[in-house]
Image (cartoon, rainbow, N blue to C red; front, side, top):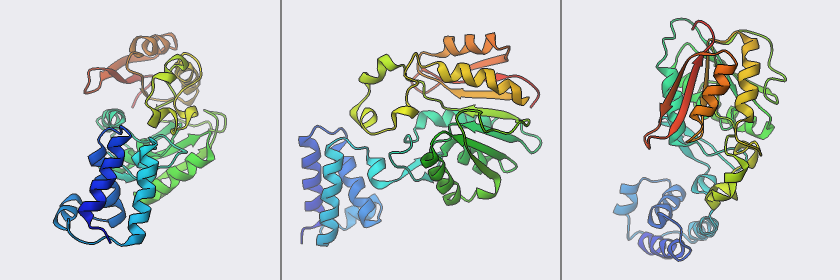
Amino acid sequence: MPTVKEVLAYGTQILNQNKIGDATRDARLLLMHLLSCDRATLIINNDKLVEEEIVATYFKYIDRRKNHEPLQYITHYQEFMGLPFYVDQNVLIPRQDTELLVEKLIALPWNHHPIGLEIGVGSGCISVSLLHYISNLTMVCSDISQAALDIAAKNASINACIPRIKFIHSDLFANIPQQKFDFIVSNPPYIPKCEMNQLQPEVLDFEPAAALTDSGDGLAFYRAIATEAKKYEIGILAFEIGYNQGPDVTKILEIEGYQNIQLFYDYNNKHRVIIAQQGEI
């Protein structure tokens, strides 16, 4: 049987040969996942023998990663806002950029028992994180994909917020009951069709295209949500947006009569979040 050090070295070599960025890190994380250990434990046990069954599974994982399958889909794990999330190819992988959207909503003065609606819940990372950090919040979450809703429900269970979350299978607002929401939040498909071929293979070849692009100018869902949201007497409308979409989404919100429109930049000084007000919060 090979040692931890030998297995890790060979896995790293294969990923490097296939020009996988962060090959050393990915090879290490895959082995840590299989051995259910942290990095320190892996290092301490460098000379420990690895069972053949684990070695075989490890190199199946390495083969998947060398073909650009995202690490998160192989391990079915991604951390977001300090919380664990299950992911597979039915949902986008939660990204650190999206944490800014959650942070901005958490920071608002919720002095009562707010009810939020998320359009396009995906993995559930936004709603579940909001529920974790806003103790008196309840959420209604919709998605056109039943598979995504199932994953979001799984993540709600993992993070112990099932009693305060409701899932609805819906294309945008089609099946959303008429009621007042204190806020509506969405990270919609916003990549323009013309930019899809610029994406890394990890994204283009594996993440669900319907969650990435509207197959148009990237603004279709902002127009639709901004229009329909007004029927729900909302206080706040909050979006994640593309790196250069601030002016366009601002204009959409202005045309629809929203006020106090605020644009926020991410850590790379790119447009990332826009929040607008319709009523009281």
